[in-house]
Image (cartoon, rainbow, N blue to C red; front, top):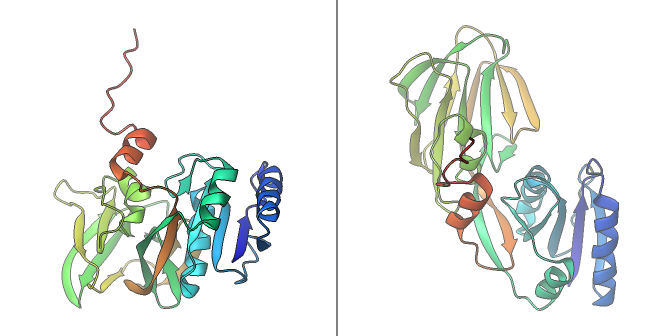
Length: 260
């Protein structure tokens, strides 16, 4: 077995955690190479990521081309995609093949993949724009809004949720379409099958598109989005109870604290 280790230098504690992971791998006589998130390479047949969900998203997108399982060790805030367990237990479980994987839907626009979402706004983000939504070349509706989010189930608990979208079970093959601050009371999120081909355009300004909150496509008049032929392969040690994750991480269904 060979292991890729991916780390994010922007996280202050990365060096200490990287040293612990390398030591454990050496104790198990596992060959490995470590890469900064900005310089990913395909060396191993399993990948360990040191970072938050953003680092895991970028890593999972890269290794989806190689169908390599990606397991995150949480060094961020929410840790939706990562493991909280002890590093020794994580390495031991990987070596003993005691983990399971989930294939997650990704989206793409041309050569640009997304595991969370495409966020579409006007280039002049200081004001709202008029967006035209098409599905399978059929006009669906138009929005006067601050933007439109096209999200995977994985991304449904990210910006999509903050904008009023639904929470989707992460392994569903569905796409969520959510307008951001629409200037109407009758605009509602849409959940459509993953086979649908989605297009968004505008006639009053060019579009700026953010991909997973990191990459940006600027100054285009139309964007076409569909399911990617590749799926991200996320690894976990134990079967994840999704409803417990959203309850514990987002305080789902937890009553507010009584402030006297």
